Image (cartoon, rainbow, N blue to C red; front, side, top):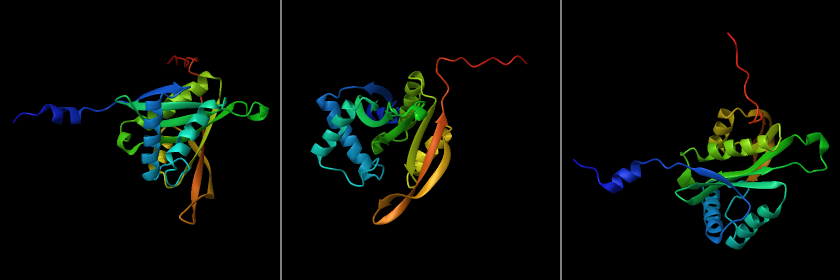
Amino acid sequence: MTTSGSQLVSKIPLYPSVEIVTTLAPADLYDLCDAADAAIEAGGGFGWLKPPAREMMEKYWRGVLVVPERHLLVARIDGMLCGSIQLVEPSRYNEAQACTANLMACFVAPWARGQGTARKLMATAEKLAAGMGYKVLHLDIRETQTAAINICESMEYKRWGTSPTYAMVDNRFIAGHFYTKTLRSPFVQKKAHND
């Protein structure tokens, strides 16, 4: 029995790539909106419960790009944008927390899940934050996002608290978990142990 080319192609794993963007070409904006809509419909909509009108979604992404403290990282699989995460720097007037940045609005389209996309987005955001001099990252997740919770905890984020009234979905409160991670500078080499 032989295997057809299409059967072989369907078995080849897809590998995500991640990039930091400061502009979005029209095709990329379209893909990002589609991916966000799909993630929202699948219950992982980084705050939205149902997809907004396309015009509103496009304005949202354009707005992210003009905020100086926000850095948009996007994931691609086979050239198509399929997810994103935002690294948000603290206000320049917040001296006490100047060492801390936040990860926000992370999502991956359902068709791109299971390929390591979310993990790669988060790892790239961590490297960016460490390279910018941040020592700590914070993030928060609804308790219903079990896959995201598992990824964060496997990447050594420590849960430090839970709010029982974090979000409201279908007229009932949903808890949310708060996480922190201390970063190691990517430019500092580990000390060798002399045993």
